[in-house]
Amino acid sequence: MCGIAGFNWNDKELVKKMGNSLIHRGPDQEGYYSDHAISLGHRRLSIIDLSEKGKQPMTTSEEDLVMVFNGEIYNFQELREELKEFNFQSESDTEVILYAYKKWGMDCFNKFNGMWALCIYDKKKNELILCRDRLGKKPLFYYWDKKKFIFASELKAILLHDIKKDINKGAVDFHLSMGFIPSPQSIYKNISKVMPRECLVFNLKTKKIMKKIYYHLPEYNPQYDKKKLIDEGSFLLNDATRLRLIADVPVGAFLSGGLDSSSVVATMSKFVDLKKLHTFSIGFEGSYDETKYVNIVKKKFKTRHHHKYFTEKDFIKLLNKISYFYDEPFGDFSNFPTYDVSRLAREHVTVVLSGDGGDEVFGGYPTHQIAAQFSVIKEIPKSVRKFFYSILPKKNDMSFFGRLSEALRMSFIPDSQFYSEVGSAFVYKPKVFKDWSKEKMEEVLKISKGNFTEAMIKYDLFYNTLADNFLVKVDRASMANSLEVRSPFLDYRFIDFSARIPVKWKCNIFKTKILMRDLIKGLVPKAIVFRGKQGFTPPIVEWTKKKSIKNKINVALEELYKHCILDENWYSFYKKINDSESRIHQNYKIRLLLLFKWYELWVLKNESR
Image (cartoon, rainbow, N blue to C red):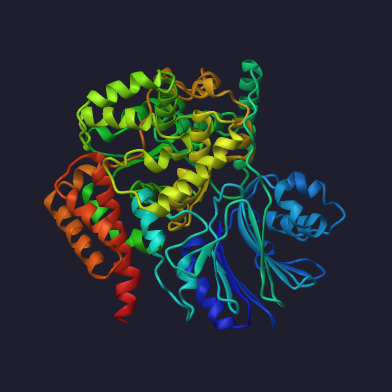
C-alpha cells in the first residue's frame, strides 16, 4: 500500500509536502517526478519486490509512461506471462500495470484482479489517467477549477494547496443520514472522489476531463445447480485467499469470531502453517463482546493469537486522532476499534487478510432478511394491510406498536423508495439523501430484474455498506498504522459469482448466508457456522448515555448550528431526540459528535492560524 499525489504544474517542493502528509500510508520510501507539465509524488509501503527496482514513480524503458500507484494487483504474475514482449526491470506488480496499459490501453483495468488507485502520465497523449478499482477499495480525490488539477490518496494532501475549501452542505446531510459521504462527493464543494470502477482522463493541454466506467454491475442471473455453485464458491475462496497471501513481508489475519473472518483463517490453513500465523482481535464490554467465539476458532486452528479490549477511555483518547486520519466526517464508529486492532497487528505483520465482503456477497445482513420479510408482507392483500394499519395506534417512536405501524406503512411504498423512506417516522431524512437513495435503488432493481431482496443485497454491495463506508473505514484505520488489509471475499470474481446465486440461497425470512454456510461446513466449528450475525460494534451507544459524552454531543449541536453547518431541520431534529435513548437516535448523536470533531480539527483550527 502507498500514498500518491500530483498536480498539473512543476513544483518539486509542494509535491514533496503532499507526499510527507501521506507518510503513514508509505513509511518505507519516497519518490518524486516532475517535468514542465506535471509533478508526481509517491510514499511507499513495501510489500512486493522490496528492492529499489520497485520504487515509484515508475517509468517504462522508453520513458513515455510514468505512474504512481497505490494498491496490489494479485494476478500480476499471470499477466506478466501475457506481456513477455516487454523487458521487465523489476519483480513488482507496478511495472506490470505500466506495460499492461501500454499494450491494452484502458482495457487493461478489466484484466486486473486487485485493489488500486493510480495515475498514469501518458506523455504521447499528454494525458493523466486516474483510475480506481471496481469496488473502490483504495481512495482517490481530485480538485479541478478549470486551471488547476490536483489529486491525492487523501484530502489532507490536497488541502495543502491554496484553493477554495467551501463546505459541501449536501455532504453534511449524507454524513448525518448515512454515516458516510458517497462518491463522487466529498465534504468540500470543489473536491471530488474518483468513482469506483471509473477511469478519469485529464487532458493537460485542453484542461478538460473525460470519465469512463470500465466495469458494469453484473445482472442477476441465477443458476440453480446448488452443487456446482458450492464447488465454484469453494474454488473462489481458495484461489482468492491464495492470491492474497503473495507478499515479501509477514502476513496475518483479523479474526473476529464471525463466520467470514473464521472462513478466511480456515482457508489460509491450506496454504500456510497456522502455528506460525498471527491473528488479531478486539473485545468489548458485555453483550457486545465476541471473545468467546474468537476463542473457539483460536482453539481449533492454534494460531498465534493477539487480543485486546477496547474501552470507553480508548474511544475518548482516539477522537482527535481518528478525525485527523479520516479528514472528512465519517460516522461508522467501528472505525475506532478497527484502528486499534490495526495498531495491534502492525506490531507483528505488515499485511492482514480480513473477512470483509462476505455479508454483501452472500446476503448476511439483517436488512436482507427484512427485505425478504417485506416481500412476504406485500403478498398479503392490500385491503387486509390497510385495515390493520388503520386500527394501529400511530406512534412515531421505537415502541413495538411504533415499529409495527412503520412496517405496515412501508408495505405501501414503492420498492425504489425503501431506503429513502424506511424509518422516516423516527428520523429526519433530507431531500438530497432521499433522491440519491431512490436513484440507486432504481438502478439495482433493474439489474436484479425486480427482485426486491436481491436489489437490497446489491444496494449494500455497491452503494450502502461497502464503497464509501466499510472500505473507507478499513483503509484509513489500517493505513494510519501502515498496515495493508486484503479481503478474499472482495475478489471481483466473487461479485460476479454473487449475481448467479439464487436469492433463496442467500437469505430468507428465517436465515442468512444459506449457501455460504453449506460451502464452509466442516471448515470451521459448528458454533461459528450456525451463529447469528453480530456486527463489529463497540458499546459506544451505551457510552453516549453517560453525562460526559452527552455534554460533548450538546456542545457539538450548538456549535455546529452557530457556525451554520446544521440547518434548521437538523437542529430541530436533534433537539427533539435529545432525551431519547433508542439505538437509532444514539447513532445519529454519535454522527453529530464526529462531525463536530472533524469541524473543530479541520476548519476551526485552520481558521485560527
